[in-house]
Length: 246
Ligand code: SF4
Image (cartoon, rainbow, N blue to C red; front, side, top):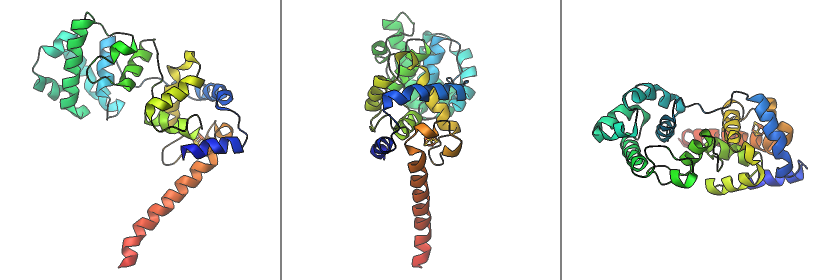
């Protein structure tokens, strides 16, 4: 589908990605003035731990757990001063608590051994922390004011494809495509704009193209509606099929 969005953009004469990106950012920024990270944190360390906890769960869920967690664990040493099982219990509600507790403790060890207990700014340093993959490192670096890449999560991927900014499926390749067209000064806020637009308007299953400020810049404004309708119709057909056989 991502390929046909690009084809549709050419067919409808919507202009090159490079020419559309400016107005896209401008309109989204006006529409979602409040677009920012939803995780709550007060320090670099709390930011790092929050982002690590947010894997496979919602930011709201993380925000429910972190106030008590950050009262108890204030320095990297604190995470290593308790048995792993205790940390697992403290983060249980965020899911995948065993892997997360192991990753957090491993990261705290590296912070103490290699970075004097401070959260590093450079992407390649952040990537040395156990359990910190490119998306987490990009989020942390951007929030620290040192964006060195563009965060690609499920919303960024879906919207970038629908807007015809990439035809790729792989997040690293999508990021590379976006880095070529998004001005560097916007690398930190661009993902927030897409994430908030994805949550509020360009829903995965029911995009609200009729109220979307990007309608005239988006090659999917018609295609997505057709795709959603046809997938809903095939879903109905599947749902009907078993009983019609009886
Ligand atoms: S026009 Fe529709 S598909 Fe395109 S960004 Fe807006 S809601 Fe999403």
